[in-house]
Amino acid sequence: MEKKFKLAPSILSADFSDLQSALNICKKGGADWVHIDVMDNQFVPNLTVGPLVVKALRNKTEKFLDVHMMVIQPEKLVEPFARAGADSITFHIEAAEDPASIIDLIKSCGCKAGLSIKPQTPLSRIYPFLSDIDIILLMTVEPGFGGQGYIEGSNDRIRQVRNYLNENCLTNVLIEVDGGVKLHNASEVINSGANILVAGSEVFKSEDPVQTIREFYKLAD
Image (cartoon, rainbow, N blue to C red):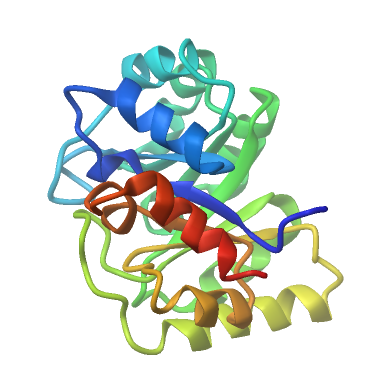
């Protein structure tokens, strides 16, 4: 039976000294994807991981590796992350001078192409590209740090994108929601139209991360 949504635990909130444990948690809990936040301390005020970490993860898991690049000049990092083993590569509309060419580049590398948008950026910025991508990632916090609260009004943005996809026969495009997703609000996010939920601190900072992942999936029953 196909799941109503996919969960993508974000290793940004995991113990970076023991990422193998994070992968084990994802496997035991039954998470579909592993979300990898790439930050360059320029597009966002934080610095995280690069292709070498993705390559190390790729060697240790068969899970879908979901790379979210919060970087300037994202076109320069597409090929390195693809070679490292990313399954999907998402970049920000706000960081791209030529989004269409970056989408083409990602696809040419054999990866799913994702496009992300910040909470304050008008949704109209992404509409011209939705027919060419696989994933639209809606940020529901300001990107840069984990553990933030879900921005009020984000569910309305999810519904607007879902309606646009439905009206334009683009239902194959997945809506991914990243930021402040918790067990207490996940059902509303799913009901608004999300296909993929990114959860970081809610999973890895919980007393029982494996059980927390399982609790997310119980919401769909």
